[in-house]
Length: 180
Image 1 (cartoon, one colour):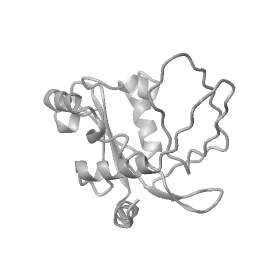
Image 2 (cartoon, rainbow, N blue to C red):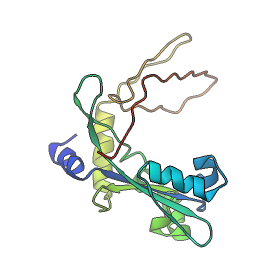
Image 3 (cartoon, rainbow, N blue to C red):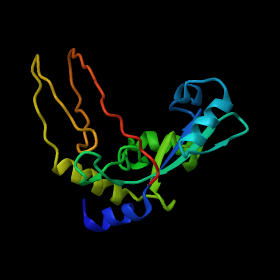
């Protein structure tokens, strides 16, 4: 990532805003695995997530997290966030336009900002995605292949595919992600 971009997000972190119960997306009951608003609120308080309830029962959450952290095993500085992935500029333009029309810019099911609250422009999100694209390594899969990924050191995703595939996921040594 360009130094100036990394420094900006190191200084401010990144913010994730979620709207639960909007025209699309995950309702708060599914997201928090409860039908009790008090339980969702307790989870938010315990995990440094700001929240507000709209009169119609929509829950909006906001969390600020570091964009650059230290790897718990190696100590190296790592770019670890979902700034571009969960940003409005990664949505299909027609979908984004419809959602903004229906719910307003603050009613999107998800969106990211700089941790100081400033919105991200398309050029910043495109730049992050261009860096990911420039460093993408694709591996063709064959029956019996196994892929091991360090989730902290590797930005990963998948390309569209056809046919059946079976994926097993195992997690070990969970890392607690705090605001600092």
